Length: 112
Ligand SMILES: [Zn+2]
Image (cartoon, rainbow, N blue to C red; front, side, top):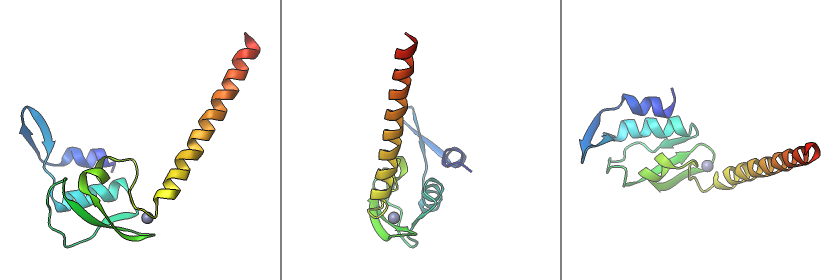
């Protein structure tokens, strides 16, 4: 199941004509784990809404703390140990795109 599909199944509430997801500790833990399979929410914590700061456990680097809403929205798991790896993945992606764009430019110039 994708994180988005799981989120769609959760109960909703309305405030100022906007729809919000009614999270609790269980759904939050499951959502985080779907987004980042190597990250689990440390059990036994009290749910203090998405603004609360929680302890997470990275399978590779152990415990770290982060605000609930940041781990739910960001593209990165925010584990300080994973950060360099995730950053270098992004850098590689950026370089590949730059090279492809350059090749495309060269092709265009050749056919102009
Ligand atoms: Zn990590």
